[in-house]
Amino acid sequence: MNLEQAKALDAKALHKAAAKLKPETRHFIDGKFVPSKKGKTFQTINPATGEVIAEVARGDAADVDAAVKAARKAFKSGAWSRMAPRDRMQVIYKFAKLIEDNALEFALLDTTDMGKPISEMLNIDIPGSVMTFNYFGETIDKIEGQVTATAATEFHYILRQPLGVIGCIVPWNYPLMMAAWKTAPALAAGNSVILKPAEQSPLSANLLAKLFMEAGGPAGVFNVVHGLGEEAGKALALHMDVDKIGFTGSTEVGKLMMVYAGQSNMKRVTTECGGKTPQIITGDVPDLDTAVQYAVNGIYGNQGEVCNAGSRLIVDAKIHDEFVSRFQEKAKKSFMPGDPLDPSTTMGPLVTKEQQKRVLSYIDIGKKEGAKLTMGGIVPKGLDKGCYVSPTLFTGVKNDMRIAKEEIFGPVTGVLTYKKLDEAIAMANDSIYGLAASIWTSDVSVAHKAARDIEAGIVWVNCFDHGDMTSIWGGFKQSGMGRDKCLETLTTVTQTKSVWMHLG
Ligand code: NAD
Image 1 (tube, rainbow, N blue to C red):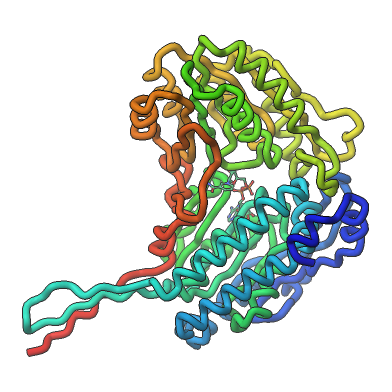
Image 2: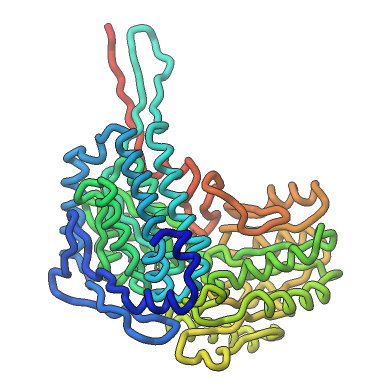
């Protein structure tokens, strides 16, 4: 069922459709679904109900090796890597269309697997994934080389070529969309890919791989290996015949990717990692209500399980009380935890019991550190079977508290205050992370100064989380060193080669 039809369904119809789901749980290697060589599996659990959805193939080094061999064979055959650019483009466009046509199944798979509200799947993740494939599809016949100026006796040109075999290791917070961000540019440039989805949210990856072939993609170009990070993920990152790992996930594991590259074949690595995004709200904010609504959406959307979640609200001391009171009012109206399969639900459960425990432990830490728990901080009543945490706000937060320093990855934010702008910018930058930031001001000089001085891959002015495929997505500092979306990404999935001819 396509996107528009899926959007018209009510909770009852969505539950009925979810009950009928029969997700494919094997690996997808060389165009076929196959079980793990050792026959092992792991469980994936619906975090809204605690029920087991499926037993999924648990891959290890042997399964990864089979996928890498298939990917290399496909790459060398040229069936995809040397397909005429406009033909490759047509496959990617058809693939994007098929994702849209199968929107209901994608939405049900990711919502039941990781708990995000189905309305987010239908309005953000699926359209965002379709747009990603279309955008990179459009670039295929625009990847160009160069001819340089040389002496008349010489001729020099530079080719831009695909890398070969790319491992895409992705997290669980946007299972389909993160897979799209990683695989779309790699495929567009002619590479073969091996997708390793997160073990908390493995189910939509197989549908993606299957649709790639339905769209006309050759066997072996898009492979999926399931499994645990330290088994399948590590084996992929250590493999001697993988040319690159495109990684999205935690900073801790991102660092391991660089270690594994060094321990194996010095493969290229790009990392998109954690964040602790500051939003600076100045005393001359153009419209406080709008800023507050964006602050609320910026932390509670997707249960706060967002790399750029606005988890540090740096507010001018003059407007602190007004900001905090409006924030609570708007949060209560906008985010109410509930059944993620109900299209009116705005907040689902966290991804697992472990994640719920982790987030609740940070709430304890915040209280012990002396921050004031002003809103939430509990498991909502009646939802204790699932992994829920209510929208939470701390005030009186200091930047050296753990709740201001560490990525919580849940619906928890804190308000810090400042008196002078320099102080606010210094606070924003006093973090190991640098993924995103925002500034709310009516003063154009303040806006430009902050945009220049804040250490982050994206700085929003008088908005938050706006953007399209042309905007850069990537971190400063320990938020990583990759770039997703945007044209620059193509440079990370290709390599350049000089051809120098002596003409005599
Ligand atoms: P994670 O680092 O635990 O896992 C990410 C992926 O790495 C998973 O597929 C996992 O199986 C794999 N993995 C784990 N250990 C591994 C190992 N030793 N070797 C190889 N692979 C391994 O992250 P997560 O909990 O799935 O996701 C949350 C994190 O992702 C947060 O830190 C969030 O900020 C980050 N994230 C960043 C972006 C971005 O664009 N910067 C986007 C989404 C999520």
